[in-house]
Length: 213
Image (cartoon, rainbow, N blue to C red):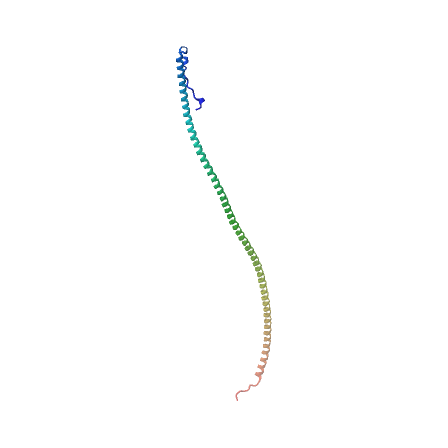
């Protein structure tokens, strides 16, 4: 409590009671009593103020200790925060490094897979091209073979046709010759028959000789 705010105890006003009738001795005694009471009141007020001040001092000491403790805790917390920031920075760097490594590995894997697929695609295209070329060659070869077979068949057919025609001509010639020979044979037979008949008649007309003697 502040001194200016301490209520002063109201002192009894002895002057109001028959001051005109008191003797100097009474007045002096009364004045001493009033001063003692005022001093007593002041002492009590001082004691109260000292007790209040002591309480305030204790409270200030407690608050100071609490502030010191909080400052220490705040320093510890700040130190922990700094350490955490450092660790977080390290973790961030490590995380970024790990992410970069994983990204590089994944990109390499996909690049290898893509290159492998490209190789397979190119191989498939080459094989397809080869197959198309082989098919075209086979088609051309088949066409040539077909043409050659057709030509050979025509040649064979023409050959056998000529042979058949030749055989037919020979057959006709042979038949003509046979017919001619038959005619000649018939004519010769007729002549021979005629000659034989004449000879037989002549023979019959000759005398018969006996074979027995």
